[in-house]
Length: 316
Ligand SMILES: Nc1ncnc2c1ncn2[C@@H]1O[C@H](COP(=O)(O)OP(=O)(O)OP(=O)(O)O)[C@@H](O)[C@H]1O
Image 1 (tube, rainbow, N blue to C red):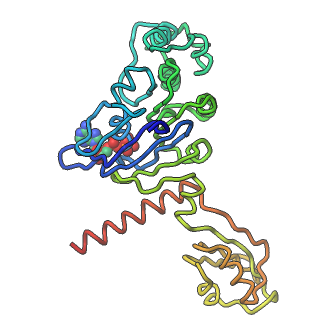
Image 2: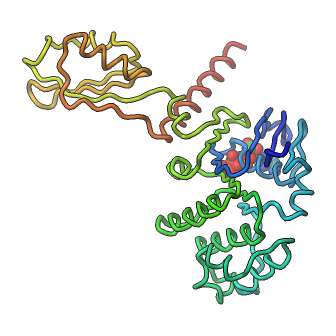
Image 3: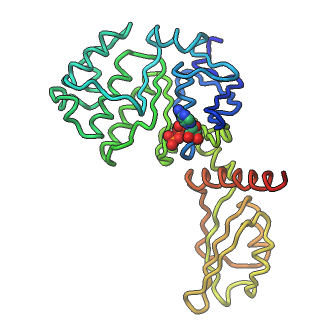
């Protein structure tokens, strides 16, 4: 199909008894910036390896631009930055980038690639003398040297400090803005949150969530409500009333100052809970409703599945 960059259809991959990827169905479309999230061992690297044709699936099929991964790579349509694999040693950064630009069927200008990857200043350094973060940027340069339609990055910011990481994400964003499709695996949820327009959550080889970060947060459902209740305002305080509010999942009440209670509620339906607070005749002061961060949403979703697995295992 013309609008598919990549497609996994019923893909499974095991290593011995370990089911690394389990029935993966997924389509990537042009121009998307997609984050692949998941705890350690979730199957992220294996999925990227399958996408790049570095491993063959046991079941199902993986296509890139409607053909096999190998065909797409031979045509220079994919640039990749993987976790493994060393860089060539006895060469300078510029020489390595020159080589990458030359071997790609539609290689870019060396200067442009050095600039875009933010490594112009270290272009004359030897590759084996770089810091971990600098090495990552050189790997990124190699991934963008070919003017590729799809850029695949496996945990690209590993080893980068915060400021370098921010500069790096800006260069990545520029690639996405140029119309390329970008797929990156990451452990940094806040980066997925701010950079990706689509977030995929893998857990034990299965795709358990697929949507915008806002949708993933909503999928985890919960929001937080916080407010104070002052003695003498509204109805007499009764914790039972709060517990019975619609949507409430958990409740925490503290009374550090005499006559003032701080209430924190986690709810699956913030609107209904807030309406219930007023309906009960309470007078909440400083009421705040906040969403869960992606990190908490992610932990909620994967944690729920772990619990489900435990229940299913114990039922067997
Ligand atoms: N070559 C291999 N041989 C055997 N088992 C493997 C191999 N590669 C990965 N695995 C196992 O497959 C599962 C998925 O691993 P994978 O590296 O794809 O996950 P990941 O999400 O990338 O993890 P991480 O975030 O730790 O890199 C894990 O249980 C891992 O131990």
